[in-house]
Length: 118
Image 1 (tube, rainbow, N blue to C red):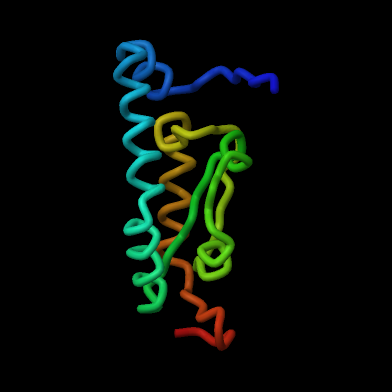
Image 2: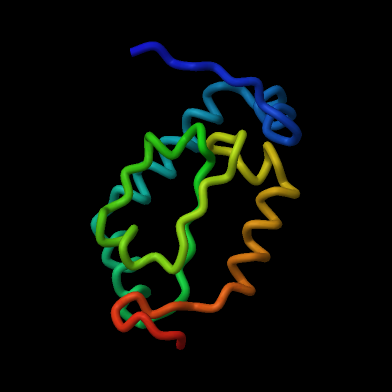
């Protein structure tokens, strides 16, 4: 499988340029380890059962690599794919990410089970 390389923008490029590769690999392993733990998914499930708003945001260059359970996608209040960014969306395009977060905070929460507003 050929890995596509995309030029990083903004803070992501600065972050990667100033950190040793070993630090970046350790950070990535930590995130994968924490989010792969069954307790993490149970905690997410418990939040969703409480009908709390749960917004998923991904960069369009990293979405294909997501390992999000189908039940989490179904129960999410929203799923937004940010254009032109990868895993470091808030660093690559901070203004775009902030716009998505603001929109999510102001969006009316929909109970997907009943289809009516909360």
